[in-house]
Image (cartoon, rainbow, N blue to C red):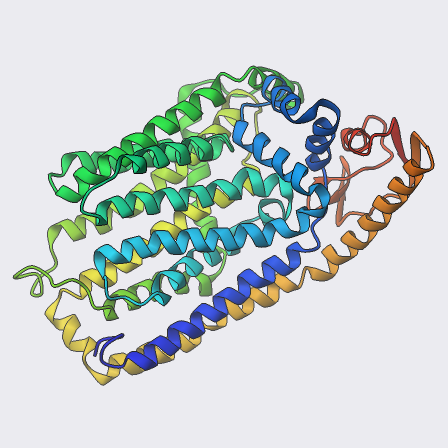
Amino acid sequence: MNLFLGRRNLWIILAVLFSVALFSVLAAHAYVGLFSRFISDDYCRAGVLRSQGFFGAQKNWYTTWSGRFSFYLAISIAHVLGGAKLAPFLPGIFLASWLIALTWALSQFMRIVSPAAPFIVPLLLAEVIINGTLVASPSIYQSLYWQTGAITYTLPLIFSAVYVGVVLRSLAVDSTPTWMAFVGAFLTFAAGGFSETYAALQMSALFVAMVPCFKSHAKSCKRARSVLIGGLVGSILSAIILLVAPGNEERVEASVVQAVTAAPRSFLSFLELSAGFGTHSVQYSIGASRLTMALVFVVPALIALNLPNRAPRSGDQTSISFDRLQTLVLLPVVAWLLIVASLVPTAYVAAYVRGGYHPQPRLLITSHFVFFSLACCWSYLVGNTLLRNRLTIAFIQSRYFAAFSVIFAILLLLSPIITAQRTLLIKPTVQRYASLWDRQDRDIRAAKLRGATQVTVQHVPGTSQDSRGNLFFDLRLMDSTPGNWVTGCAAEYYGLDSIVLE
């Protein structure tokens, strides 16, 4: 039996059901995101933009805090376009853009391995990857709903999907236009400027991709070299701009002052921390949800087993080629190395700046995206490899495989349904926060219209509290603590001398 030829209607119905179920998860996140509001650093970015202007804000942050030039440019544009009014819509905008970009990239992949595959296949695979990434992210509020965190760590993942699509497109076309290399350079340059985490991942991934492509004599690899070289040039330029930023030194000094213990300074400790952070990230991805892991590792394989693939070479149906086995063995190793590479900047901070420091949960969305993307690829390769075995083909053509696949698919539908329900559980919390924030915002703006330069308002309660004060999903809020930097940034954002909270 062939999934899209023998019993086409049945399998397309199942694929559509999966796609709709997974889309409901993204829709749930977009809905919850509508209750996002300014919080913590958001006030600071908008406040400096107000007081120093658009270009002054870029200079200020680059010279006094960090070299994340793309991030500061993007968040300044967001503030100019809508500011606090735009924040509730950003999670939905990012999710829609991410899904479109990743679907397009995977459609280029399907053009190479299975040109006859229907459009629902790349869409379904994209939803599987994004769903897994969101489920495993330990701080989804900071990674997706919080404007500063989403622009820093989620937005570059959209750029990465587009770039991978451009590379795959160059493999599929007969000749590579010059503009594709320039597009690749622009995408990696822009993406690398969002955070050190993504810049480290991007640089490492490009080097890994270039090794087999430059060793291969295939015409398709030759066509992709210009795009890879352009991407590497853009990535290197963005890394240089990140590293030479004058603000890096001040930020490091601020972290040193906050250090609780003396940090180890040996290179070995740095490597150990990087590997440890990477391994922990993988363990967290695997343990986040068993149903999600089953979805990621089974659905792509089932798709590959049932897709009309390109005709295999003579002899391939009787044995699994060594190259494919080698790829299946190496891909998990490559995934782990890339995840470790993405956490190298955090390990540097931990090993040379702050003893006992651990990765901020919000940045782990990057490493989880790597894990689930390559896990999906690995699963598809497993199915594609098994398809070249005569015994597997005989099993696929039997009625038992059809029954097994349908039953298993129905069970796996529980995963996105449960995930969507869990996502909606935080709605009352964020809705209450949004309502109180809106009231506080109206009070501050009304007082300013009356001519007040110092405003007293009620504080917005957080969801947790520790020694640092009132927190909302572990992000600092405005409060009455003397010297609270969030309150000071909020006063600058509203154009006031000070804000006092009761």
